[in-house]
Length: 172
Image 1 (cartoon, rainbow, N blue to C red):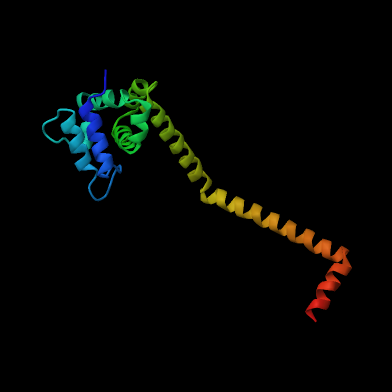
Image 2 (image 1 turned 180 degrees about the horizontal axis):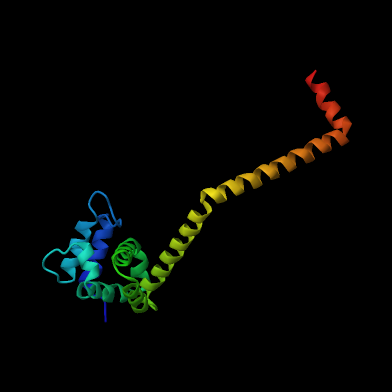
């Protein structure tokens, strides 16, 4: 299916006027943007995003449109795609998420989804590193390394008396 030109124009306009496309925005919830998306897709009455992404009839309309985007349009509208994919993955069970991934697998939107998944995995890995128990172990390792460096420095100055004497003469 070809991308709807009205959909592309709406995305371009939203990007130019800097509409909020922040998932879970505390101020507007990205509702003005989602209203425009729904209007462009031919949905007359506004549907809350939780309902919009849970119902297959609405979700599939949007997925078809973002699957038809080429690389240029997908990259230019990264934040809109991020909003769509984040909300779709937030409210749907695993089997629906897998269906979305399959539909987007070979598309430009699919490559953005892959980037988002890698980013999420990296964030999880960083959170695992901030585990309190692991932090204690790392602190202990750093303390041991610093103690070893200090021991080597003291040993060096003790074995080279002239270096340590020169430093003392300059201080007196």
